[in-house]
Amino acid sequence: MRKSRIGILTGGGDCAGLNSAIKWVVKTSLDDRLQRERDTSYEIIGIRDGWKGLVAADPSRGDAQEWLMPLDQNVVRTWDRLGGTMLGTSRTNPYSPKNDQSRKVLGNIQGLGLDAIVAIGGEDTLGVASKLSQEGVSVVAIPKTIDKDLWGTDYALGFETALNVITEEIDRLRTTAGSHKRIFVVETMGRTAGWLALEGGESAGAFIILIPEYDFSVQKINDLVLEGRRQGARYEIIVVAEGAKPSGGGEFIRDQGEDSFGHKILGGIGDYLATEISGATKLETRSLVLSHLQRGGAPCAYDRRMGRYFGSLRSISSWPVISARWSATATAGLALSPLRISWAGSAWSTWPPSMIPSATTAAAPS
Image (cartoon, rainbow, N blue to C red; front, top):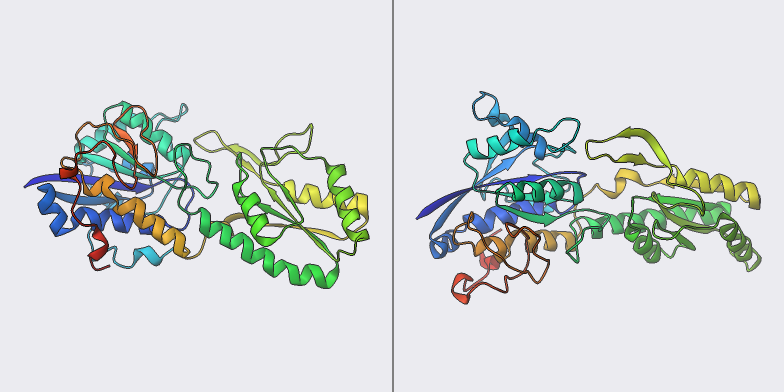
């Protein structure tokens, strides 16, 4: 039986559903029946703190094991019900123009004997994965971002749980808003995509929703608020994404510093709106930033299932040799160019039936 060693990591902001994906990558890879069918035995190595771990895990040094976590079915048995990421994460960019450490990563991948990397992350983490694939590394990408702004996939882990948090927190706000006849401006995450604000606001019944894709008029907002009060509204909930902009203005930046991917920290649009509305309408207006609450907590049922689907589907369980070159299109995502990196999806349309297991891993104990 052939042997193959897989490294798995999570990068960028944490969210719900990551641990579920990790668990099912491990369970699917180490399933005895599937290993016999594939004639391949896999070893799964968790890499701590995302790409930072692959930068630091130099096998020629004595502390490399501090960045590695051997994973088996007993270790990950309960992980799918836990929030965050048990492997840890970071926003390290090995290809940062200010500190390019990509050679270290490539050397460590080779030195650690990793035949492939499973990278779970958003545009930054998977951007690194794409560059590594161009350098010859076999990579499978699992999409994760509560902003749901990744190209090539209908869903990204963490979004639905974050949506539930927004809905629940706005439900709580309604009691105090109604009691005091207040306007509340709720600021959500969403740098360039407004899905969280839009669908969270819709779910919570927000009066006004503002997203980065469309600039807004403060005067129009004030007019709508006053019109609502004339019609008998006792309070209003306004939901705004952190990247939303007033007409003729720019993004609100909380911190001028940049991370290793060149992103500034956004924030402040909620406070700005509350001040503008209060000044123009003379109505008591407060702002609330949900911030990292949207990332935290146990995954909802949907993210637990999606973590399982991304982690256990045949993108991994069907591989005869994980490091082989192949081209495929998944029904849950799209192959990226070059062809050595692909989304984890529900089935590979170009693979012969003989490579697809006769049964799924659903029967395996969890």
